[in-house]
Length: 147
Image (cartoon, rainbow, N blue to C red; front, side, top):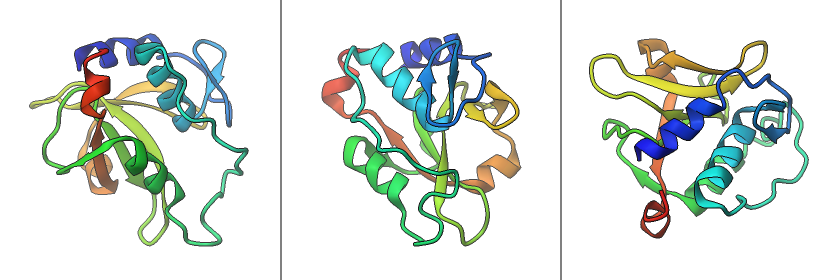
């Protein structure tokens, strides 16, 4: 899965742009996942309908979780591997609506994500981020052959 990480690192520095998914021009966290998926597999991820920044919150629906779970393979949160898709709940009791990609594992774990005001960055997977992690996924086996 290190190819996924290499591709994701090519996105570092891309500015944050809500609903976008274009390397170098702009993306949000979901756009980063969509763009990396397309770069790695040569296949676009299922189109995403327009969404607001507070999407899912008023209804309390785990829309992002459901969409990722339909396309990826759930795995234990502690079973870290480079290239895993990470799903975060930013506030206790809120819906999960932030995603990133596991980059480094071991003592100095990192992940790559895009967020408002920073764009795409590789950050330490620090304790505060680990506390927000609610689910971890890997690509389906048939797609892992492409990477």
